Image (cartoon, rainbow, N blue to C red; front, side, top):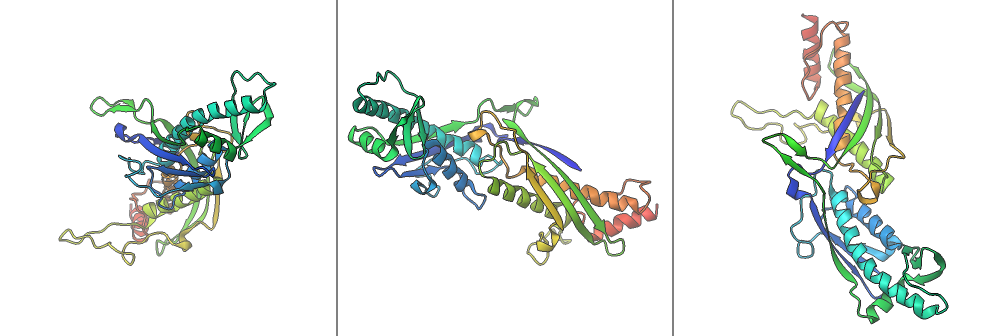
Length: 339
């Protein structure tokens, strides 16, 4: 069983910033650009969901355009598992500024349409392609009508957004400060079987529970936890780096550097997201999910060490480095038996 506590933020403090650009067009459609890079991890899908939720619009009304520094300059790397955290908040910042202007337009529209009401101030909610006062839901304004009125009223429907993670600093010389905005927690339990003649290892079962706050997209997060663990599995079991006597790397291709394949996945593999643990002050109360599950693969390495130790009745802790390849497993067993 292996627990993990993974700090989320760039430890280089100035990288904890992001920008965004949001446009609304006259037909009520929305274009969003942000500084994060989509590399298959689902970032653009999450950003689309964030924009959809903030505007109260269906996903088909929103388009995420490719990252481009001519639109959003000086972007930080999409790394440290912070892509959704900082870019999502930058997008929300831009949307909030547009909505503030639209609130004024909506208030004037209500005053013009319902003269019997004394609208002094309104608290508008954007939901189901409509805008309405929180106390008068029956007086809905279609989003497209609101945008058309804003355009005719010469109200800007474009805005930049910016976000910086607050209170992040660290003095490396003194070892003091607050290097992380929050922590992501996880737990894994793994069961293995080793062949004491060949050093072969079979991963029988792994159970994982991962804290992702309030998940923005459960399917994406489950995929990230599953994939992160399998990547970590390669790190702790097969991905060995070797050099020849001249210092040249000889494990430089898929035929010499073994990454996990389908046969390496646990025979029983259960992955669960922790429920009911919102993360305050982050985008939609979520948590980062890219890198933290990677560390849970330690449960496999520790299970292998335990299995190796059992060959000598656990009388001695085996010497077994990462990655625990078949060769290293055999050598560890021989060392124990020859003690």
